[in-house]
Every structure is written in C-alpha cells, then in structure tokens.
Image 1 (cartoon, rainbow, N blue to C red):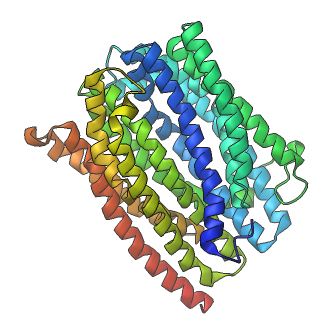
Image 2: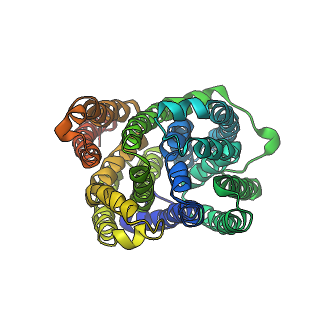
Image 3: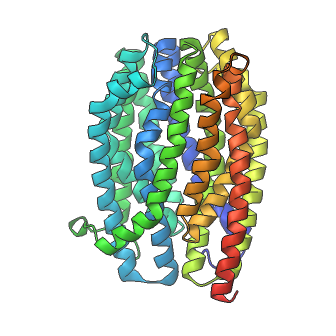
Length: 446
C-alpha cells in the first residue's frame, strides 16, 4: 500500500480493518482456550490460564518491542525505496525473532514456578498455572517468527495475508482445544498444546509468504544474518518500546498480584473480563499500528505535511471505536461473561472490572496512537519516559500507598488506576507530539 498519497482516512481504514480483524480473531481463538477450560475443566483451570496472561505479556513485550523497531525501519526504507537497506533489515529482524524465541523459551520453562510464586498465585491454581506456562513457552520461537514477520508485512501495507494465515491457524487451535480438553481430558495442558501447535502453523505460513515474495521484503533463509548497523537502528527504536512494554506489563503484574490476593473467584472473574476487554483493546490497537507505519513511510518519502493529518485521523478513529465498543461490551457484560463461566459470583467479579475499564478504554487507545505517531517520527525514548512516569509510576504509587489503606483496599479501587493513568499519560503525549512536530518543522522547513 502506498501510504504517501491519496485519502488518509480511506487508506487508514483499508490498512486497519484487516489488522483489526486479525487481532480480533487472535483474541477469539485465545478466548476459546479460556471458554473451553472454564466450561469443561472448572473455575480453578480458568483462573490458572487467566492468571498467567500478565506474566506472559511481561516476558514477551521486551522482544515484541523490537518488532516495532523493525516495523519503523522497514517502512522508512520502503517509503524511501532503498532496497539494499530494506533487505538487510528484513533478514536482521527475522534472525532476531529466532534468538528472541529461544531466550523466552528458556526463561519461561525454568522461571515459571519462581515467578508465579512471587505473584501470589493462589495455591489451588498454582500447579496448573506452572504447567500451562511451561507448555505455552515451548512454542515461543514460532510466536516470535509470526509477530516479527507480520510487523514487516504491516510496514509495507500488507495486513490481509496475516489475517488469512491467522484465521487458518486459529480454526485449528479451536478444534484442537475441543479434542484435547473435552475428548482427551488434558485440562490446561490441552489448551497450551493447542496454542503451541497453532503458532507453528501461523509461523510457517508467514515465512512461506516472505520466501515467495520476489521483491521488497523477500526472505532468503540462507541469508538470515544480523547486520550490525541495522540491528543498532532496530534497537534505537525498538529498545525504548521494549522497555515501555515491560514497564506496562510490570505494573499489570503488580495489579494482577493484588487481584490474586482477593482469592480464586476474583481471579477467575478478572481473567474472563480481561479477556473480553481485550477485544476492544486490539480493535483500537490497529490504529496505533497504522500511526506507526503511515507516519514512518511518509517520513521516508519526505511527505512531512501529511504527518499531522495522520495523527488527527487516527485519533478520531480510535476514539470512535473505543467509545462504541467499550460501552457495548459493558452493556452486554453478563451474557459475555456467561460464555466463560456459569458461576454468578465469578460473573459479578468480572462485571466490576468491565464497568471501570471498558467504559474508559478510549483513553488507552488515544494514548497508544500518540505513542505510535511519536515512534513513527523516530522518537521512541520520549514515550518510554512519559509512560514510565505517567502510567507505571502512578499505578505503582496508588498500589503501594492508597490501596494499602483499608477504605481503598477494594478491587474496584484497584481497577481505577487504569483510566486515571491512561488519561494523564495521553495528555502528556499530546504535549510531547506538539513539541516534537514544531522542532521537526523547523528542521525540514515545513
């Protein structure tokens, strides 16, 4: 897709909708894990799978941030039509994904018991959580290959093929869930195994696609190599994004640990609600990804005058999606939670989260779009610092001070840390964007 000419809104939607569908499908298939476990293995198994999500995000977000660096760099070279640099970046990124996956597999398998114990995982779900986590991380290399590969495809405007590949792998994942859990009674081991197998399929399809492409982002397996200069540039952009992702995940792990202290019922309700609200998040996140790719391609093509329009358009889109979907999910919260569990107490625990988080989720999307615009401009350290202070710092401050007071020691009080930190961080990012844009306008004479 040529992101450097024509209607921004039309192309932004053409780019974002397949990406949104891909992410929604991915979550739908992940939700199938939790639904099958919750319905056919019990609430403890549901809590075991759900309680590991924040930890998985913490361990994977560092390397997923590096894929952001690859995305920005590929888009920049694609827009500037620098083929040699583009090829070297593609091969460096894919080699980096393999190394990342191997490291994560080792960390996940060896460190699972210690980390889950530190998170105050309830005793009744601890063994199941360890088992799920270890099997899940066996497939981490293929997960990294798929995510880095899809980031490269997004950078050149291709969001359709990842949708097709994910759809096929996801259908297989659901069928294997049903086989392993309902027929073979493998409990959480079954859903973890099904996920690992489906990740292998999606990774194979995306690699096959890149091998068959004969220009731009063509991949030669024999050419996999880390080019030092490209690796350095990926790190310059991706490393701050990685640190930011880790900081967010770390604050979420602290919140999850605090949720765990309220017992298995609250953990199960929180897990189901978090899975549901994930559908709203990924729908909004498509515009975050669009802001990165569109901004970076236009910078590469020296179309500086389009940068502000891209930011405004993406913000308008994400605001609309966040408000509409967030409130719809809250309104239909009980029927949706009923897909995960038949327990009335678990559903009520889930509604406490949905009422706070989903109704205000648009702030999170708007914050992310600002981050994407700044990264597309080549500024990655700034949003990292803002997120450290504005989001993570505020959350941790609340948890370790006010939340410890008896009158504020409730799960609803805990959830309120999300919208407050999103809004403050979003406003700070807006100020940063204005300052950066004026600085670059003087440099470019635009």
